[in-house]
Image (cartoon, rainbow, N blue to C red; front, side, top):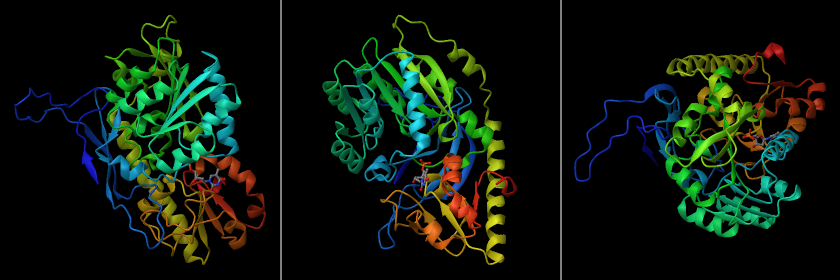
Length: 418
Ligand code: TMP
């Protein structure tokens, strides 16, 4: 199901460099174990009652003291995680607004006519790009079901992980690409150095590469432990990205922070020999990072308090005869449910707009995912918003539920603030 990783995928710390034919000695350098959520199921392994589950694996984070990258200690086989993938890019207003900001950000550097997206999901962003002037677009995505959905929606898509084969195919589709976008992908990639080499195959001298990643700094500050799951192999810092690019033909070019998904960086990358100088944001943003192994250990303690807090809210509600449901069967929901050990006895159901997830169980639990209409049909007393990154939007949308006496709870915040 998985294999073990002991060295840093950005800077190579703790790597054992062995001459051919000589048995590998172990390195004295060690990545530091900073966080563990015990055994967890793959967070998007949504299965119906009678379907076989993928299993459980240890979910723990190791920290690189050299480049500050935090990374999982194991890599679950990508075909298990991505072959049939339940996650589709949200059609929410929040996401559309984010696409607008991202598009404006790209325009500060170029006006792309040709665009490539790595991890193109169901093609939603490339459709947006087409509607905003891109004429040639090509996506690369490992999920068979989502690649087909993208093609059905008119977006040329190559099915596979981004490697030298799929890079060559994508290059043939858009030979002179203005902009390459990789949104929430880099954290999913095990061999990041090979990823950079594949970028080298598709990017020409002027290509702008835009990588969007959650910023580990915000995860740590806000205690967003529920964004730690098997798809997220790395918790990116600007310093670790700089370390990754150090011996490559690329350099950091410009960085902007977006509020989406609890705080994400838009990292622009250009070839070293590109005529424009790196933007001052690279240095100013990097200077804001002060992440150490202790920052992760403090976050680990905070996550224990958060889990206890949610457990106490739900237990006392159940003891008073109140009903509780979940709202949004996000991967974060799976992490919370398994960290808290919830069953259907405590959480009756979780509503979700994604048809693929409906009538499956939240991975690792017996809790069913149901259609969003169940919120008003059943009118549970509490709805825990596991899609908390859309909390403001959901709070507005579910006015009727609230007016009927329902309480929407952000699991990261105190009950009294709702
Ligand atoms: P995400 O945070 O990874 O985008 O996942 C959010 C999940 O929540 C996704 O499965 C869709 C679901 N969702 C709803 O059910 N209702 C909503 O209003 C929103 C915004 C999301």
